[in-house]
Amino acid sequence: MQTTVARLALGLAATVVVATTLAAAQGQQPSPSAPQGENQQPTFRVAVDLVTMDVIARNSQDQFLADLKPQDFEVFEDGVKQEVSSFTLVHGGRVHNLQAPAPPPMQEGIILPQSRPRNDAAGRIFLIIVDDLHLDFRNTGRIRDLFKRVSRTLVHEGDMFGIVSTGPSSLAIDLTYDRKILDDAIKKITGNGLRPSDVIQGADGAEGPTEVRYRAHVAFSTAYDILRQLERVTNRRKAVVWVSNGYDFNPFADSRLGEDPVFGGRFGQTREEGRQEQQQFRQGSQFADADLARELGELTRTANRANATIYTIDPRGLVAGADLDEQLDPAEYGEHIRKTQDSLRVIAEETGGLAIVNQNDFDKALKRIDAETSDYYVLGYYSTNPDPLKRTRKIEVKVNRPDTRVVHRTSYSLRQQARETQKQ
Image (cartoon, rainbow, N blue to C red; front, side):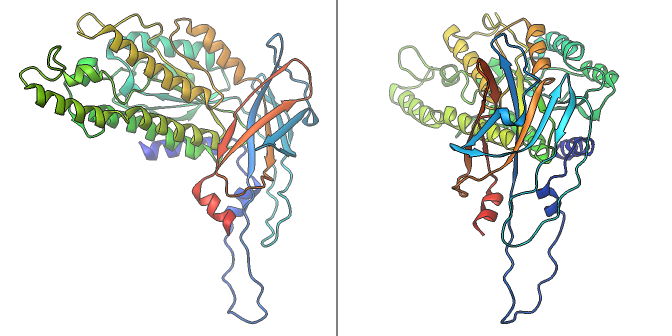
């Protein structure tokens, strides 16, 4: 799976603008150092990143503003105003103008050659994650219908797309323009998520249900691999469509514990045995929500570092209640649904995307995604942050035009390796 994801993202990099000054520098190796001598000058390695972001500007009538200029934007990083070095307008899915990034600010040490600018007028690019490990088998028909809507409403002629699944649907489609491949892939999509009874009767580990954690690890690892490869892609809106039922690390806790209404433990246990088991169970699962929040935080930071926007879709739509053959407390089931939907909201909203959850009007939501991936600006700047050791930087974009609403990612995070380079 990891090899396929890497190949998919590398194919993407071959079709878009990927050469930046930093990338050119990374492709060169310093010559072997001369023998030490009294007059030898020290050599410093300097890394200056071009930070890019997608910006959507709309007026009070929710119409995209396609006539803005670089001077109309003000970009702030941690409250420090930045100079816009690159500016791209994409309108109707096509690049209309491109201001190549300026060379990085002059630094002491190695002088890096300027990369050769390249142009590309390709259509949009979508990466689709089919998390069939978290899709209900009984909803397979509904899921396939959703993807037919995606093919009809979202993916147009001239758009590139790639598909990766997390489970037995076994989808690993490299980037392609051929929509027939998408239609064939839809026929293979099958839900393979756990039923509530599978979770309740399954094995519990120190961190809760082991199968639940394993499946979430597979889904997040797949997303990590894609997002890390996308970091090398610039000047294109990187839209990731993530279809899943969401995530809950501690589902149906009371039902898994099997509480006796009188003694508070499993049937047949003494009162003391029930209390001890209950205490151990609570201690092992009380950190599950914190673990999920940490996982989602790292995932969204990785997406923001790659300037990738994630759109999450829950094919369940409006959820009324559990299936009749699942003996569940309605309140407990409702809490599980809320957590899974909230996880999808976090993934989307923290990356500047849209979460399509708890609704049945998929066409309207897909049309909104279509608009957001067709009309946008790409702004780039070389960070002059006064604190180079700060990992997460807050971003704010303002437009010098009244009654304008701006949508963009609000932060990005440096890799550990990048921070170590800055310290040198």
